[in-house]
Picture 1 (cartoon, rainbow, N blue to C red):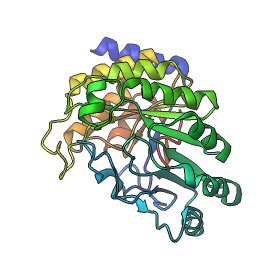
Picture 2: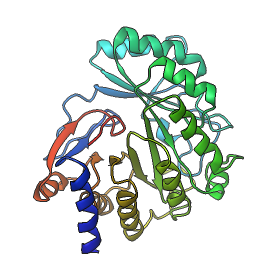
Picture 3: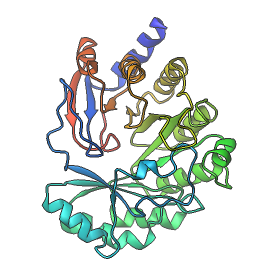
Picture 4: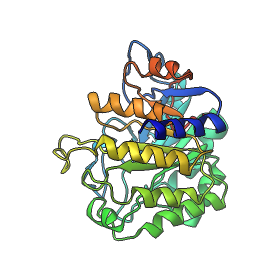
Length: 313
């Protein structure tokens, strides 16, 4: 394993500068001895649907939406963003539950999104779900800074975890539409999504490789209380390590980040150290001690209080 770690880290050194990014967006309060979140209001997540989601995926069941700011239809998206902006927020993540086709209901909000960009000058990231060509076009016209989408690489996972009647081709089509209109693409892969097991992750990686993405975000199945996967063990560190290695070698020039979602405790500490070892470019909510470890590897830490999807190497 040491030779593989050295190989992957050398790929990083060949293609990136010697900085590593650490992120603490305002999804939650965060503080360690190495990284103190000072402006938690800087980047805030908004759910267009509140806690409602038609899919009720096995791993989530709307739990991921609960920490987000629910949109009050009477206030409207622009007014909500304006209120946040007045309180020091400079960027927002627009997300929400999916409809039965796997799409976040974005279309009626595009005029407000354009106003948020043009009148408030805020950074706007959008978690889209599956999109059609027209949605991709309107996202571009609205001027969003980036689009985020979970890429699923196995039809079985789409059916059994996401409860969707579609195939991996729909996810690749979304990537193609984003690329066609020149959007800044920040795809996510959830490691262990199929009930803690690897199934379509490498196919997802292959799909993403075919498109000019801004960065790749890796998250890890986290058993959430109150979901059907609450007792599912997360994927093994061996499987995660293998994926980090292959992702770094297969996407040598693409910034690869560890996103917000991953198990806590010793598992998180081990994952974050592996991320440094295998030459990944950034980590959200880093475990205590990881910043010092990165320095030991010759890396210079940079700290951000927005989403890892906003950052690059």
